[in-house]
Image (cartoon, rainbow, N blue to C red; front, side, top):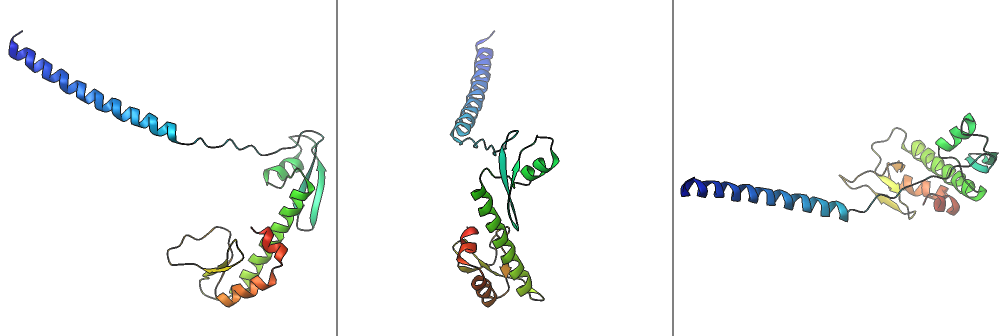
Length: 166
């Protein structure tokens, strides 16, 4: 092998080494970035065991049940619909939250009949707010066409109902 051929081979090796070092840097940065990301929490919903009592929230109150088995249709349907609570207090709070949400939605439907696009809503602090152009619309928040309609709806809600919506 001549001196020129050795120089050409050495240049090729240096080039491929530089490329490999760049790839190593990219992979190291990827690993570091992945390690810095917080892990998603493992969420496990409470589910009663055989014979254990649980509560469900209905528009007319709360009911107590005894978990029969994982194949018992009523038990499974209640649990799958997120209406299975460990305590009667939890179920009662959900019942009130559901009634308050339905009442506010009904008021919005009735007050908005035949009106244009609604742009007012009652926020989590029980204050009336207006949607700005381009603002992302919060899911499940009843909207009112006028501020006066929103104020009227707010006046129809009890303090307990508004607290339940938070």
